[in-house]
Image (cartoon, rainbow, N blue to C red; front, side, top):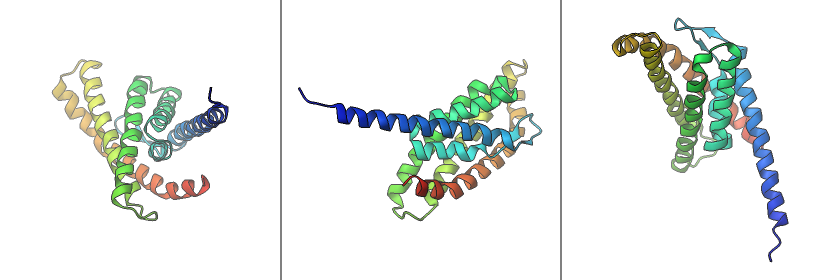
Length: 188
């Protein structure tokens, strides 16, 4: 019988480390979302939390990063009283981190330079496009079903949220692009 206690201990240590970093990223995402809020006409707000959503995916991978991003963002909505958004926020932000990670991995293969920020920028833009589209579709659904209006009216009303979400996405890309090199240097 093969002794696997060393490899099991290493795997348990790695899992514990990953869980701690994921919890930290969820907390940073929640705080980053709540600490600075710029209200929008659509009853939402622009915030720097999306930078941490993207960083969660880049630093932790698609599963742990998606969970950290989704939980941190949904927790912020829950604490902030945006109850109707909690499930959608969890899914949308998890997908933002998930997609951002895979685009980042692909772009790192295409652009092999360690100092070129393009993989972070392109993955951030792609991830934030998922966020903008996700909230746009959710708001159409919410406005059409919860408010009892037509899908067309929901579509028209949801377009008001596009520009604020794009602005939020741009700030998320900037924040993740600035912080990513710093965080990767710290983790070495």
